[in-house]
Length: 533
Image (cartoon, rainbow, N blue to C red; front, top):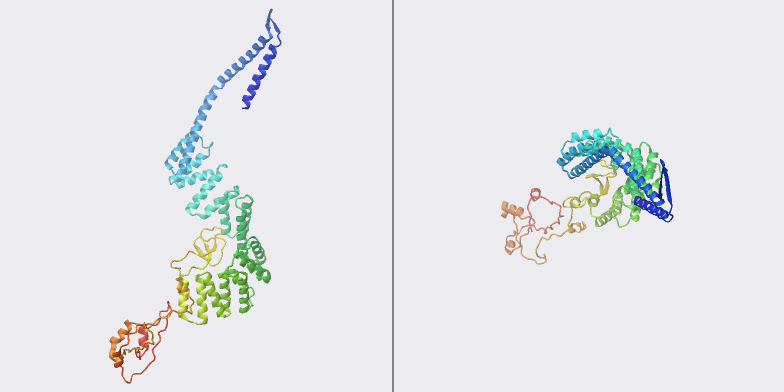
């Protein structure tokens, strides 16, 4: 566009010049070799312009002829390069689509048309073709050859890292990732693998520096960086809890400041403060964490903040937690545990049953079973509650990559991933649902009717005589357990006059999970069999 505009300006200037000469007539006289030439001024101007144009055209023709060999060779070289890049592009597309044969064909074609030292992508296409063909050793050698080229070094490290990950060689993968992170710390994959290596060997300070570098280069969001720092500081506090209490206290308090709702950070900070007899500040940290999300570890440490407290004092502290978070199952469970330790069975039972109503889970039934055993010792009810616990949903726990742990850990024991543990219920077991009638209070035992008709309707009864029935009567009694035969008038006639009168036995109501007494054992212990009268 600019060149066209310049051309138009030149033409317009020439036109103005010729118009100006046409308005001013004149002659031009030239004397050359004894001859005198006289022409008009307009003709002379036209002749000068024509001569200049002819010289320029002649110069262009001579220059074109002189540069024609280079121009022709350049044309064929550009054409060859275009064909090579077309083959390279087709090969990359084939490699991405998984067509190993076409990728290998286009690799050879591109290598013939383009020199590999001029285009590094040929090495990448060759390595990808080897991977598609299953030649992992050849691909690894190609990636290793890339390490000598500064332009291809990161690509070679990335390929070697992926190959080490495929083979399951964690050490080699982290080695290549560390080299890449040293050259280019902005690479996310290298930084993440290096972070896993640092956390695996417990280098929490190095991991914190790496997280700060990721945050400064904007590899991760600000919230993610804050969460990672809190996790690393909590892990550092736990590691230094015994060797350096002061450093552990500083790290735990900073972690709690970054994430006040993170239970492990709150527990670590409070434990460090309790060791230094700062019960007031530690309790405030636990109370803030409890208000954010009730956690059993927070409750356990809060109720046992002072080791010398009596059981009633711990119960009062548990009730204080309950006041902070009312109508929550974990609050009721905390009070129930403290009440059980204080042998306040009524409070413990009431709170445990309240926890079951709010969140029916395994731990609540187990706690209620402990209360029942400590208060009454009724093994039947205890077994009933234990059977409910088996079928109830599991309590929340620290879960990471399928591993269930009672205690929090900064990294996953399976993958080594940082901040992998989550506080949630593990995978539900089969048959977890409990029928609604099983959730009724244990005091409301089901009534088992022994007679189909009211007792007030007095009718003649049949006498079961041990001597008359003998062995057959015993077998019949065993086969028809818990069955009462109808009373007839003939039975009254068969009653001996000296028969001993006994009161009708009341059948005890059995709990659903109580196996009762084996009839054979009962028969061996009793000298005589059951008699109605």
